[in-house]
Length: 302
Image (cartoon, rainbow, N blue to C red):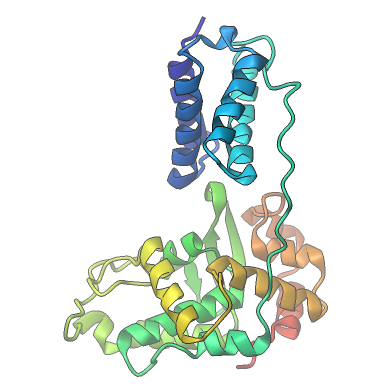
């Protein structure tokens, strides 16, 4: 018989080391499981019943949590108890007959071409940091990158001659994506700027030679910093709230689809879980993918 807290810890280690989920995702799982642990009277796993699950859901509802938040916590529990069944810690999951709360799926909105243009041109490219930000924004729209993927890029991931990037996505899965000539122009201009190596007033020279995008201290730009500067440019461009980097990702996917790109290619470029490995690209002609990409992307010739 395994004690619940020890089982939760084992599950989080499994998420980190086997499924290789991000630290942010693992923290969310740990938080949700700890909430449940505090509510289930520290029982062993085999003692937990559907009644305990219902009691936990009732306690969450009394806290005025949204259906989406409750759904997330219930999803974490389902994943944990599936893991517990596979490990033979329990014979069956106490969630088998528990229904998840119905939640309305939010349809993500897409920006118009003119709104995207306002966003991309909002940085002041005459400054070094403004040049960096223009390159970043162009890249987010060029290749539908997630924030974590953009800040995680290394200089070695950029293949200038083939106009591609090696992206490390969710679960550390890798994929190759093309980038537009416009985005490549801004990135190379940023990398060659003298302030990158020499620094300037209030900006330190490069401290991390691997990172593609640096902060003012010469270190790799963080996801939090990217989120902060993105919000500032959204405000400057007077874009609807909430416009996030994910909205830009959804926007370019929508623009690709509207321009006639097939769904399979879009899935490959987005790095969705069923097609997000580098080996998948061996089954798709690089030349054909480039032609489809160049034909469909609204900023290829920018």
